[in-house]
Length: 196
Length: 282
Image (cartoon, rainbow over all chains, first blue to last red; front, side, top):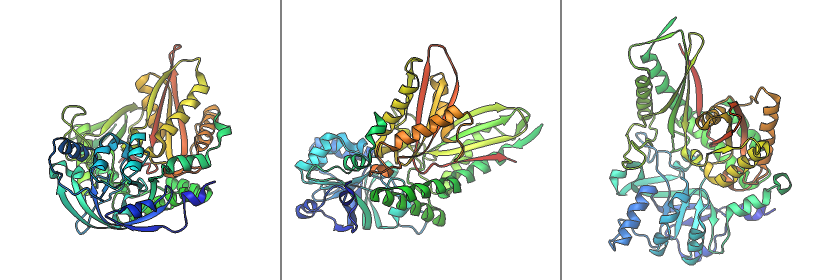
């Protein structure tokens, strides 16, 4: 069992932008309470960001030390900061992630496994991949205290928004040491005898 | 003969799409709480605790549990002695989706065309509608919000009769392992066997929409469901893929007669939200 590795009792408080020493302290399975500015971007926004980078133009957001959250929020009711905004499946962004890490991105928040290429790039660029509970969107939204449009308004829910997190509960999925929450978790609880 | 006004159908759909996104039925909640009680993995238990708490917040604030409020799915069972008046049935259902998704602040996630023009339709229409003609004078609607984290991880395979039960089991386990965290476990698994390519897929979908706590009436299939659940939960994937013994809440199998040459298999995954409701139009 790797219970201590996959679920230490006390979450670590982390504030963006992320620095190398903070990232060095994070290991797969660690629980994190993330605060500070985080930018939303999912499928369509990623496509535009990478196209912009490839043509040498400047991006509509700073990437250095920043964190991108893969989410497409539901509409906010009047009086709410943001509608439900849980994580979407990160692997759809895999082929568009390395250029962003090369441009200085330090953190990603989503759900689910990443490709080998992205995991290696997380190590090479000293970044971190964090995950939230998929489908627990109303819970996450309670911890988002500000939301402003940054770019690509025409994309609606897929536009880039600047969010301010206050203690959003996350788990480290991929760290700079090659640790992987999903591999560790499944290996600890797999009953191999039944599956052969 | 019973006459039903289309306006009653619109109204029912309008309310139902909101209800299923805000409120958790007792049966689903009981399954999740039982999983939480028995989950040996601390990380898995934490995920289940958050999932259950999220449902309480959603119901209390009348906000959707998940930002992905799905593509709407409507199964219509029309008694052959029902007469529908006042408009076109499919348009009435569309209107209910349009109104419900707007009023409920649900996310609009449907694009008008899959390949060349992926522009949002703006109101989450159209839903996918299936019609069944049945005896009697009732109109029954089953309405679901299908999230695509799980839908994307589903599969159809046309097996040979010789491959049989062993391959069915292997395919289900492989599907769940490949889906891993992406399908937002603990999942509900619908397995469709037999018929044709599209019939198997439809059976898998109908299996997902079956009421909680009702194994297949045929004891052979009920035993298969139980065995598949044990196998899937032996993968160690667990809640959210964070490790644990509750990867699926239920496995449900439906079958239909098929051709001597074939064994069609469809596996449809539903995330832990498991949002659907069956209602009769009065």
